[in-house]
Image (cartoon, rainbow, N blue to C red; front, top):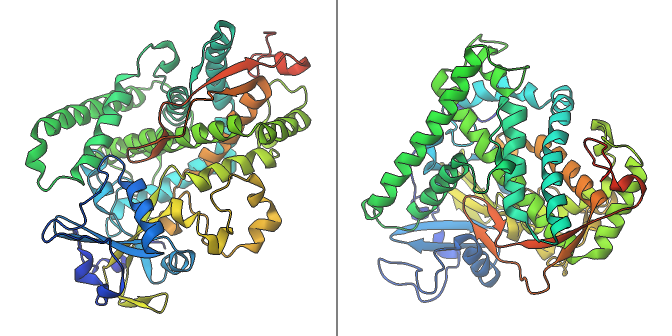
Length: 491
């Protein structure tokens, strides 16, 4: 069994680091700390993750920050992160940022506390939904949604207009998880504005992040009312979807069918309707937010590195040839395209941090004592840039870091874009297959033209996304590459 109720005696609720780290004085903190307020001078409230990255570079592989009387410990050193990955001594910690989402997601897979039984129940019921057989069944629907994206980009290319990369990737990934998981179509590509579900989802994520930066929730009373309305809309949308399914509409063994019809193989227990709603919202949010960011960053780097794009495109042409609808097994053969994706996730992992808590009194990496329940936040973008693991050029984009020989030469637990351990992302193979497929289709069909004036800016919600990324796309017109990758119609 994984992280379940076996450690239920661990302390619950927020614990400031001064309660769980007996030798906290050994851990550096920013200069100019103010009484009561803490490390607020020069802090960037709109980009807290990137602010912590800046401090981490200055203070070293483990450091602390204090805000409004609460002390936080951050870790990014490879050796320290590897020790935190030890499942016998550490487990997932549901930190403030995730706990703030519990009003909408409750005890769903992502937001459940370790002692809550619904995590294990949902995990065991839903894990077969990400098997190879299930993934092969999702593949044709992924192709269909990608066809709607390429139709949209074809029109932009014909008109000589740039494409909104993050906006279009969000539409793509939302439609993909909605279609494959729940048999639903939001009609994203037919809308001039984001679907109201996306607007409500973004609102709840933004509100959850704002809660981390205010001393008292009542200061956000008007925002709280909007958040309540957003949550109510999300709930109504999903309840309608579930109601139609229970009434016999659609369903072909997808994730929603599994949630409604599958009992636990050992206990016979089923998910409650309330928990089904929470799981659906979790998959719709997490199942598209992270993948859309990963695709957007990958396209940014491909446009900025034409030699990498040319090598990736040559692989697609060689592996897929004249195939109009590449098969499921052909996606895994795009090994260099997958390296491009992995390298993009290394530099900007769209789920940028994960927290770990001690299951027992222990000493982190033989140096920092931790009491049971003490926790630390691993800054994944800095872990992925640690020169001790990635070399002195760790800031440079280089997909060959994921050549099999290079991967074997690195210590374990240095690449963690999907978290770690039993509570790592259940849908990671789904996301990787979808993203690799889409990159292959876009590389085969278009030449990417970056905006020479654009400089990468990263916006932060719960996930990371390039801000304002637009680029030109030109159709390639060489043999099979001119055909529509989905329909085969000549373009």
